[in-house]
Image (cartoon, rainbow, N blue to C red; front, side, top):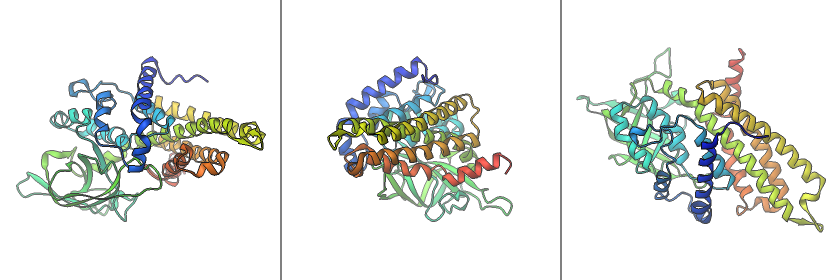
Length: 385
């Protein structure tokens, strides 16, 4: 079926991205994969291409588009080619909404031009060792100085995507103790310059998948963060985090759908070329049935994604609907990619084949942004259960 979610401008953007990926990324991607990260200078190319500024107002150097669909196309095209832009997805999909929603005009003038150009890459630091999804249990603190000029930041974060290359990090920290009535009270957000004294990048974590996405541990030891780098109001950070979760979960749903669709594409090519018992693997009924079943599931995931994209652009995507999209698409991708790897046989277990990388990359989709179990809880609550 023809997709109606994208217009001519979207498709022109897709053509530009596809050509860029084929020319600039595919020839060197194996080197990035082996190195475990994207070269920092590559982000300047993305800035020149305009992908960081699509949703940034023109006054700050962006294109002023108010649509998440361009980011969805980026995800679809990189996944289609079996490559990744590393941690830059966090830069735009996760960090930009906070800057656009809660930064003051003065802060936007300071931060957004470099954000758009790639001169300053952003990450967001929420998770801490030992707390996982329990953000209310965070121990990182930010204490306002006596003269009110700066906050003193102390603590540690982990699993921070883009943490190695980041020039600024949106750090969640406690500016006040939780209350007996509300464990979430007292959390604030800070846009921290990674060049400040006491800010340190620890280990670059060795992950099962997403090998080109730099993921790090961060620590803060008496980091003096200027008071002017507080994002939004003190003690309202937890509410801010909750407001951006639907888009984060939509982004994961789009990525999972794109992975499943790419898996079918890679597998179709493989089974038509691979000979077994003198015949192409594609000629066996089991192959046809398995891929047909996979396509039916991906078609359904596409419909869910497209409906969610339309709702998000209209400002109507609820937390429960985003959770439902994430749950459905990530579970579909899990099943489809597993079946496609099976059709590759032993070669599917080799990292030189894109299906093996997809298999590893896909696994985290049911964990980050809220586990599948958390998604079910959100959906059940919306049902009055």
